[in-house]
Image (cartoon, rainbow, N blue to C red; front, side):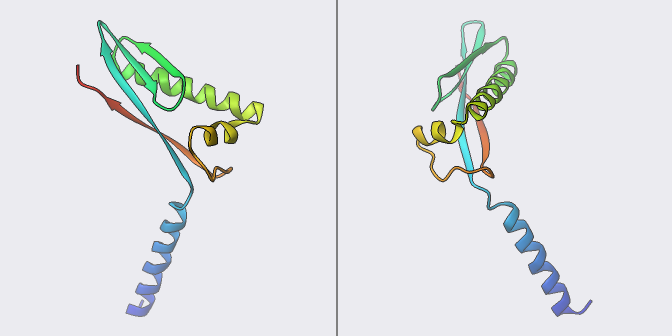
Length: 106
């Protein structure tokens, strides 16, 4: 392949990678804190709180609780409305939801 062909292939790959990453993303911040002998995890923008014996357990339980919460909203047909009410706009079927988990020091 000549250099023009190589450049075209690289540009094509770059454009493909760009199109993969253009989906709207909603990021929720998750705090995990130690309280006594347990760990407490919560989503800052939502009323979701869980407890676990370790930080990892609290994080895993929170992810599962968040998944259940989101599925309930989808089933009720109000996930977009709920996300918009906590400050996220331009929500659509292709929106990705990410949980960003932060472990706070004691």
